[in-house]
Image (cartoon, rainbow, N blue to C red; front, side, top):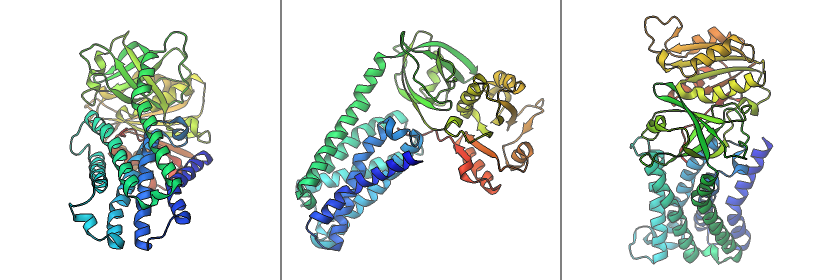
Length: 438
């Protein structure tokens, strides 16, 4: 809580620092004009910090979780866009006239700003609607990695040659330092670090088929190196180096192994796209660059949670399995209810291991399978996870329970609405938000 607050305050100070400097040291230009300039200063600083937020910097990430951080990265970009869109309108209304907005006969620094703004509109809209327009993640990221630095450089050029506020030496220093830091961060994040990770690549030990379209990949670190410490429920980024005919792409997957297991680390991966459909072709001996761990979806971050309810759908079982395995390995006897939703029996991942866990006392696990399309022989719960089923297995006294939710987006949102209607406060809900764009 305190660590997150410190980072938020620091972020706000950095974003608004140029505005404070110009307010005290700059020349006033009228209220409307000054507001327009301040919008541009703030918008540009937001764009500057976007590179830091997306670079997986541990000091920044550990207070929030990378999934939350990248969602902030996505939506704060919309705020920056709004500020920068209003900026020329206010200047035009102020002292510069509306030719600033519509005239083609403008100096080249103005055009640099216009091009940057158009590109920013494009990158924001494409990022928001990437799934709806069926743009693959790989194509989106390639375009993002090219356009984001271009927007920053064009914005820098525009403000350096046109911005009245950049006549202040203090603001000039901030602009130059910000640009240099962003270049360093971008080059390290996208070029240098991947090469370093490849040199320290893990080796695939085993590929285990779990269901028809789900595999667990076990990986061991290079000789003489230890597996980096992680919490059960966290995720990491993997880049597989396999047969030359198979694609080489970085993707994020949840860690499914227990941190108590020191010999290997594993991820359990479902074929839901072009790349993941090739996971079954991974072979022992292949190498993989591992970057992580990230995220805060783990009971280890919440030691106050003693009575746990896991509401899980499909491959969302992966982080929960890591937590259950860790509880088993550490002889944790806390009470856990796992309600696990799937379409059919053959889609239940880790079924045998879960059944075995439910027989033991570490943890004290109650296991409930819910199938939406079972065959006629199925005697367990049918349909979808709903209030009736939750109350059936949790009882009506829910004050001491904490709910961990992980599954498809629509299912998770529906369950959160159900829990809220049941009087469960959000502070006792832990949600895994895994499908994010990096």
